[in-house]
Image (cartoon, rainbow, N blue to C red; front, side, top):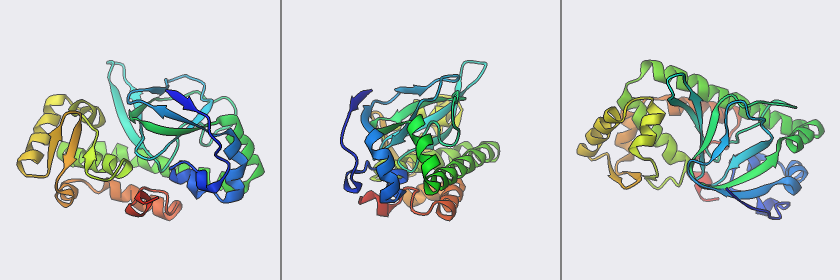
Length: 254
């Protein structure tokens, strides 16, 4: 992960992260001097379970992060994806905070980083900053709840369509999703053969096609019809709690 220190003190210089852009000018000025920009690659490790969480990572633009829970059989099960609508690491807690999950970069790109200590200090100074990050933590918890329910009741096909749509919304939104069969299998928590079968069905129906290292969505509406409504539930909660932060077509133009 390469670091690029930049002057991010002005509102017009804000990174393309919706949570940072939600802060008013006065609040943003409190953290801007401590922000740095980095370029991360896919599969870069941000935290392992037990690591001391010292840095908040804000995915920017098409960057995407995955929370993975290690299991006793050696497999990692992915729980949620976080893109430019949020941040990972030290969102609500103060002081020493060990990571519970493995957090890795799913899709590479720019990230803004902020020391947790600086975020904690800003929360003490500003009630509105505390409010925004508390609201975001609520939205993240809603994603976790929804993911748990989704894994329990929805089919592999429904969940595969949901994950593809979720990744598409958080990346460039142009229908090209840098998601491999292996990565989708990890998101679904199933063997690659099951994932390949679903992908082949989608391809036969003209819903999508595959390229090396990516999936190209040809019929978004058809894919939405095959997906469960979990993405919509999460989006609706974001709009109720933290309006304008969840990725949308309007935010694509920023």
